[in-house]
Length: 170
Image (cartoon, rainbow, N blue to C red; front, side, top):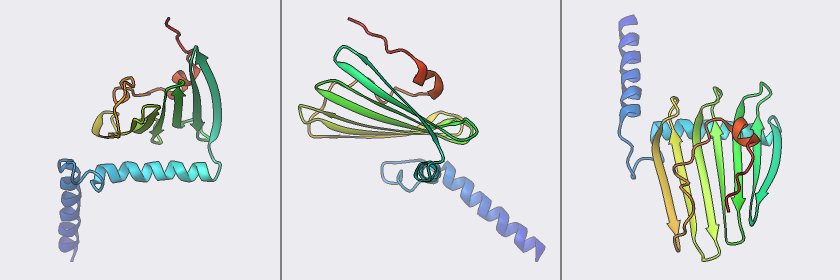
């Protein structure tokens, strides 16, 4: 009986490991175990938000026509769990939400942009426990727009980013 239990446990762990190693594709990314793991972590942060268990700090900065609101949400132990950057000008706006795991590692970034020309886009980036991006999904709706490199932006240290001054270049 012990041998059977050991073999069953070994087989299930190998199956789980192989599903994690399975390639992520445009067909399976929504149900891939690595993405599902991050979705569960994201939902845990949403629960903390709904129970008002996170401390919220908000700061608005501006430079000329551009302004942004920064929101830093931290757990009772001080760990950053979410950072939201909502910025734009008179012709466009992008809201980016960064979500962090219990260790403070960036695991998910979601951005949504809109512009007066009708452009509308969404970007999703998924990061492993080591902080390296393993999947990106983005969708343009209607027209394109010249937003900055949203996919290249990663806030690794939300506390430092929250405290930065906005640099104005004219």
